[in-house]
Image 1 (cartoon, rainbow, N blue to C red):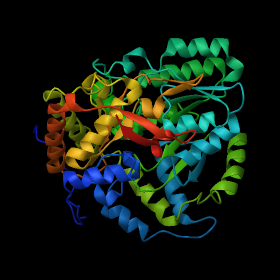
Image 2: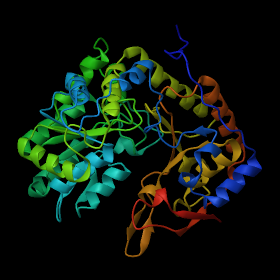
Image 3: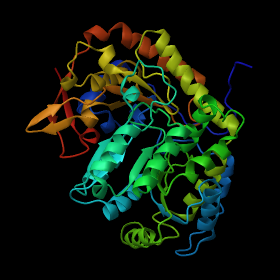
Image 4: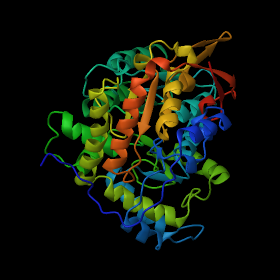
Length: 454
């Protein structure tokens, strides 16, 4: 069968608020043209992020009733730990309230002046947590990953030649190597098993641990099944297990591929590092068997880890995202190819070539998408990753707009509506203008900056 249907039924619904274009223009002005500042009640289709926005299953809601809220030694923790070790058998599992808390603990322990942490591409909070320790966050994605129009099955791959060069010239400065799967900042592009394996070999050669930023590990595994020779007959679970067999540790936002609304963890094999991490966890998150989470959260994560590697779910997830991307491509809207797992990334720089990158074409496009159809998306470009040096700003490598699709939330009708709205935006793209930033914080400016249309 070519038709892909949702492998679930809907038992509960949440009403959406319909608004007019005139009302949305007023909301934009009040929000200083920053979509993060909009009230979610004023958003019709929310594609700002897929993080923490999943719909939980009946089994997850049932698991919540089993949540044990003991301060220490809760059975809910051990159920979560067992479910995770079935996929990723690290020695030490340290729960946190979300992924950035795991990043904060890890980089606070291994970072410092003069150090550098390479990654295929650091995402925003990852980069911020690395740089907050005065460590350099270095992106080493393969060159193919920087060309939105190029068709390549694994555009998230680490550039092994550049990684080798770094490890040879700055060995003592590198505390660990990271791989982000899938590569969110680079268009949700997957990393091949071969690349993970070869990255691990390089790490072993130079005595460096390999860490995974594994927020979308199941989606990455399914891309390996679809695209990498030798994996077509393997189950997603088996592929996930192989991925984690090459890692020495991981940070995780459970709000993605654990299918929950809150949670995360830091997983480690190093005993000494784990001891230090648990001590910091107690200071900032909580006792090591709850780590800033309730027993209910731990139970829901345990079930989510079982459900996310189900092949029917992953087939639906990848194919439904592809459906949106292919439709936009047919409309002549430039997108990051091939379509990623959790989102469709529009190449705003190619779509709006008349807008200078320093006037933020991605933000301009995202604003127009909201104005026309009440769709909230996320700029991943010069607003988020523009470089500041010597009082000047330099554009990011790409200006993208991410339409992140919450898991198990929207139906095909919602996606078809988005396609119709993007068609309208595309027809009027020549009239769009750029923006200036009128106020910004010292870091992570995309969350709170104020804009003014030119």
